[in-house]
Image (cartoon, rainbow, N blue to C red; front, side, top):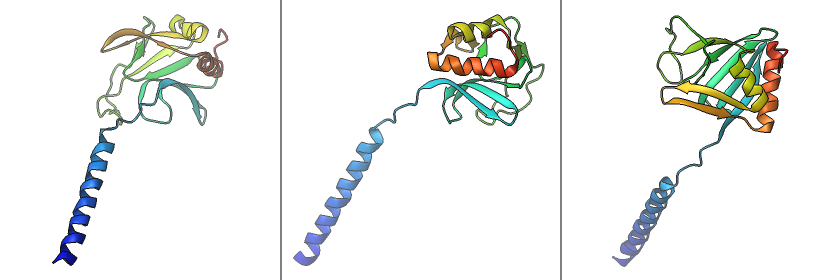
Length: 155
């Protein structure tokens, strides 16, 4: 009887310890990656995004073709500018949120975007209200590269 009872108690002890370790590990929250400005290129398209790098967690993305002074803006956050032209119909489904995609167009020479290039501050609007996205010195270089690529001569 002891030959069976001792290994069974030991096995139950190991199972309880493993379950306790897993429960403790699940309580640890992963460290959230910081949000910031990121520049990428996809063919002839330049993409300037504010969000978590290498993820689908984006608050704002602007795209443009080389030499075009017009940017297309996507995301839940939009530049606070009276010159922002919203798409007349948002019928495309956003694959990230499952809702309607929000799309707008804006000149890269718009004062709000030029303020981002000069001072690293972009006033934005969202459902939560108005606030400001900021850029570090290194991110401001990426932003300037984006505007230069788009064809803005005033960065």
